Amino acid sequence: MIINNFKKNNLKKEESIIDVKNLTKLYGSFKAVDDISFSVKKGEIFAFLGPNGAGKSTTIKILTTLLKYNSGQININGYDILKDSQKVRESFGIVFQDPSVDEELTAYENMKIHSVLYGLEKINAKKRIEKFLKVVELWDRKDDLVSKFSGGMKRRLEIARGLLHVPKILFLDEPTVGLDPQTRKHIWNYILEINKKEKVTIFFTTHYMDEVEKVADKIAIIDKGKIIEKGNISDFKKQTKSKTLEEAFIKITGYDIREEESSSLDQLRQRRKITRR
Ligand code: ADP
Ligand code: MG
Image (cartoon, rainbow, N blue to C red; front, top):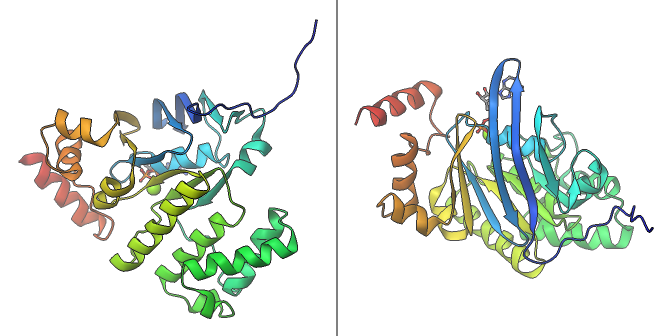
């Protein structure tokens, strides 16, 4: 009898590159993620949406092996997240919701460290660092300390860094928040190009519904830890008799998603206003 013990990635085209079944995560006794299941196909652009506190970042941290979970089954790029966590880690790049660049280093040094951590060949790394810093228009600032950068510039640097090792999946947790519309557009153009040319699967969260409508193939909406909607944007709009995704989102959650720039008190007021309507 031949027993196949090879832990290889034998994903076929059309198979799910992200597969989540019955995932639950508790912080103490609080259920932040409550029995969610969804999958993302290879090459897809998948938007994971939900109001603040819904459980989006928690889910991303779990999928990227940074956070333990209580129950569920997760496969990333054909690998079991618990059994093959190293293979899983090699499969993705990530842009976190919170800033994660080193302020005391230059932009170039931040990129270089990442290339070393990922074991990129020196020559390759040099070329890629230049390419990606140019894409996010930071090449002429490459030798400046990141502490001098604006929030938007730091974000652009993180995006360039996330792409450096040409991952199979790129996780982006609110990648464009706080950026001006032109930079947002530029960044999305590049992400779309990466998705198309290098077949990188994109999993992202955002509060900008216009971005979602323009770029996403599929969406899932999470609210209070539960997935309340998943599928195509057009089906979702039809089903809720909405003209825009934003309208559909408000109808189904009772919240306006555009809350990221307001204070929590404003958010509370906004939520109350909408729920009372
Ligand atoms: P989102 O990214 O959708 O805004 P999060 O995943 O960050 O939401 O948070 C989901 C819920 O879990 C929120 O109620 C949040 O306050 C809570 N939460 C997040 N991180 C922790 C933590 N480390 N300890 C306890 N509760 C947490
Ligand atoms: Mg978050």
